[in-house]
Length: 350
Ligand code: NAD
Ligand code: TYD
Image (cartoon, rainbow, N blue to C red; front, side, top):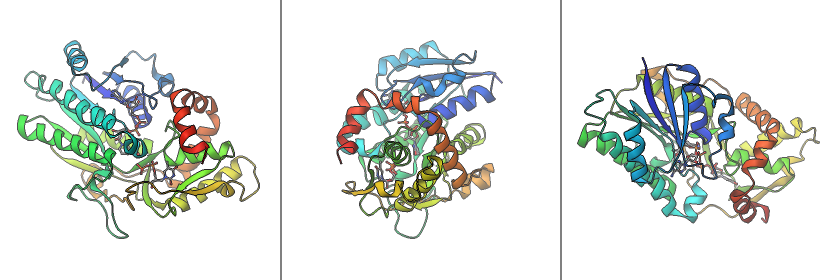
């Protein structure tokens, strides 16, 4: 069936994998990628598909209500897969308002424009891509399920929790068909080198200190980004309207153990003596309000839709390291300009 789908944030890390998957797997769909191309968005992530006839890129800001209304007037969308966001916790601590503007106001603008389509498009779907961070922080035991009470603790997670609540409110109040997924930490190609894995890799490559916050004892549940894109595809097509799905990697690592493992992979790939990269590990001041542990119970998406992560972490990390080592030009481009100033102030001088 022919459909026109708006994917927001498609030039970013996860969005680029989702856009590629939809453009390649569904040639009868028209995919419109809306992205502001902030420091985190880069069209080089989509070079291989930009000439495809079922792909269009539009540059614009989801926080601009007039622009969003005119985009929706021009395109008669059948669905929205909404990924555009400010996504880095450390930046949200420095500038919460930017996160409210994009993640909260931007989401409301998309919901308002979508609402106008409902009468003529009963099969319309608004799919919000969210994070497990809305559930707060776990102790040593237990997992986040879809029933876990929201308890966001950073400006980033609070902005994502707000947007989740607004999406649910439009479902209940205006009967908008919606679906939400809350995913654990992603890793893989195209991830901006401000998040833990690509930042550590980038610094190891340059023989610069690798910052580990606090004692490195915080735990994250890591998922390869293409496995997330597969889950998004399944949920978009087969998920139940009004439902939430948790997505996770069944793959918990303490930060320090993950970084040491990455060090061993990098030593091998760069032909450095064993232990070279570990010498770069530098314990730095802890993040304010640092959540201790995230871990997802993904049994709902497994039981209802048959989704499971396909890659073991060792394999995914190997692929990720290979991608970054083969794409040093990409690294050079994304770390020039605005990001360079941020990086220098945050990491270089530590
Ligand atoms: P990212 O920062 O790599 O990409 C975000 C994209 O949104 C960029 O291309 C950026 O240019 C665009 N964008 C930012 N502000 C915009 C605006 N005002 N208007 C239009 N476009 C704008 O983020 P990501 O890691 O790919 O995350 C994508 C989504 O997935 C986010 O909603 C995030 O909350 C969610 N998520 C991320 C993770 C993760 O581990 N990265 C895990 C779970 C959920
Ligand atoms: P990050 O990749 O920023 O994702 P999130 O905060 O959304 O989970 O961080 C992952 C973990 O790594 C988190 O516990 C913070 C920690 N961390 C470091 O120790 N050093 C770093 O330089 C960064 C960016 C993160």
